[in-house]
Length: 128
Image (cartoon, rainbow, N blue to C red; front, side, top):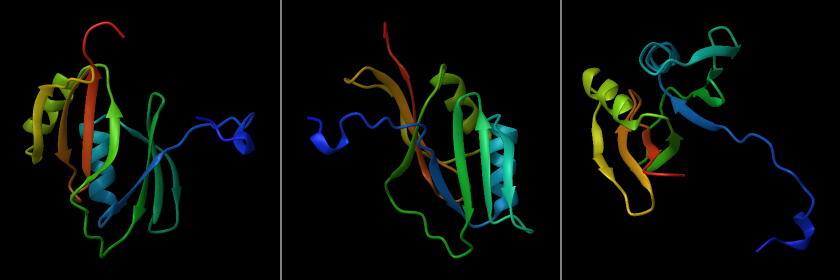
């Protein structure tokens, strides 16, 4: 149900912001392992960074005393969830929920990035 106050308002991109304790380690992980590229950096040393891979965008914010929550903080839809799962396994990342087909039409798994952020990754199963 759409609220009358918001009818006619279009929303653009919404990007996840991930807190990280070590900006260089996080950047290395998302760029080297998942293929993101740095497109913006703020501060010296960097306290905020924008990474992009195709249309996907992640914002990283430096939080040196960050304690990651025990719930998923981002969801990524990818073309090949099995390939992302294999990359995570190859790089020794902790898999929180194993790869499986879900009843809601996605093949998915959850991993922890180097800062403990839980990322849910999925691909559509069957015709979209």
